[in-house]
Amino acid sequence: MGVTAVLVLPLVLLGISGLLFIYQEVSRLWSKSAVQNKVVVITDAISGLGKECARVFHAGGARLVLCGKNWERLEILYDALISVADPSKQTFTPKLVLLDLSDISCVPDVAKEVLDCYGCVDILINNASMKIKGPAHKISLDLDKKIMDANYFGPITLTKALLPDMISRRTGQIVLVNNIQGKLGIPFRTAYAASKHAALGFFDCLRAEVEEYDVVVSTVSPTFIRSYRIDPGQGNWEASLWKFFFRKLTYGVHPVDVAEEVMRTVRRKKQEVFMANPIPKAAVYIRTFFPEFFFAVVACGVKEKLNVPEEG
Image (tube, rainbow, N blue to C red):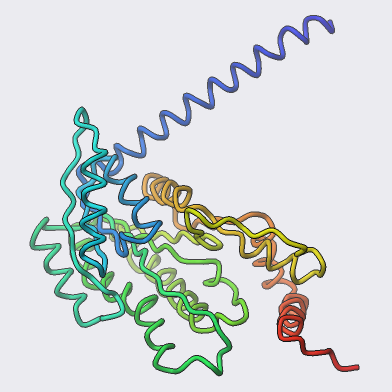
């Protein structure tokens, strides 16, 4: 019996590995076929995540509209996509559009340009985001407004401009790449967290409004999207509870992983995705069910950071 088990176990493992490989390959091919010939608009395409989304959707045969506020960097991305395109597969030349979502006045003209060019938009990926960190009382109201324009008013203005076409055609998908701070706030990021809460609230409401028109609204919320070169820093973070908590909370997700998840979200028409390790997920639940404990941990962290001794 023991000898038989030793012989059978490797075969079982090999079989499972083979099935997983086949499943991954089928999923990959299915993902690409889901966006073939679709008109896909990606905002802030020149960011790390924007570039990876452009790569994934371009390889899948999408008709890309790449938006960004720097024309030179858009052209560099364009050249990179063309240079790696597989000649044996059908791909389309991306359209480049200069767009700064913090300047809301130009958004309707950009939407009109895209619709005039392709006649429709099948998938809108709201990826643009502006970050700022600092004490609330030291951040000017003008800067607060700029963050809200880039992270909230810009995306919803573009969405509203493209939505009537999707409703009339009774098809389309809108993807919001948001952040964990759309679910809970972290100190020294007041304006950023407020904009992410607002965006998530808007698209959650919109999801229910447009369901009858077969328009899908999806939100993808990673913890933080880290850069290609920056990894979580090492150090004695476990010296206190709050340091351990924030260390785990701020571990980022790689842009490649987020882009692949965006593609899966589009293919499976998921409504909500939360990309995080167990600690941030637990933080969201603790914030919901044990708010006083959550606030105490956060306040403790702020006091220690500012070197303010506790009373008593």
